[in-house]
Picture (cartoon, rainbow, N blue to C red):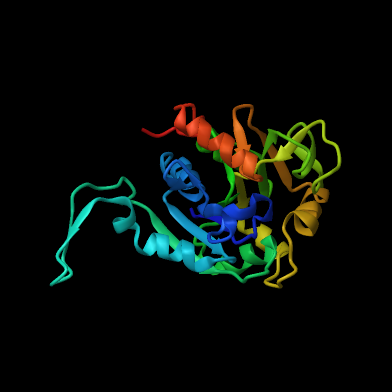
Length: 258
């Protein structure tokens, strides 16, 4: 089972924070939010990732290519190039596939372009800016129990995100970014069967929420896993400040690892 992370967008609402780096590389503490998301998954045993890259893709590629150097103290012998590491990180079991899915490609096109890297019929998908204290095994168990194509994690949040209407867990409709919301929103942390990919194309203008997900919901193939715990999204500079303050104060609800 692979975890697809959408990490190719512009992140324009973060202002100067994304002038030199892509949104998923904006730090919380001394690690990019992308790392925090991956730790949520890896702590629960999901260690194989497919990262959909786009804007400033080389920044994310270089981060993982130089992962040992970035995340460890070391001594380097300049004459030989030999490196001795003095400590070690805890991500030795990570397997990360980094795929350039296009500069301007919408989310559906990005997902479709990494289809060839998926081996299992069931895989996971999330956004490169959302954090939660979610139990992924309960999410997966729920997905397997209902037999539908897609499970979205429904969370309570502001109306700037896509709202879903559900009845007995089944998503009846999906509205991308309504003006007002009174119910659940799409919080990412999605589980899907391979059949979902048949609703997508590799075209640049193939979106995910607008079109394919709406169609799947109309066909009765989307279920909502209700997460009643904590969830936050780094959508704006104020969110970055808030999440960093939680981390600094040792109140990071998503830090389920030690």
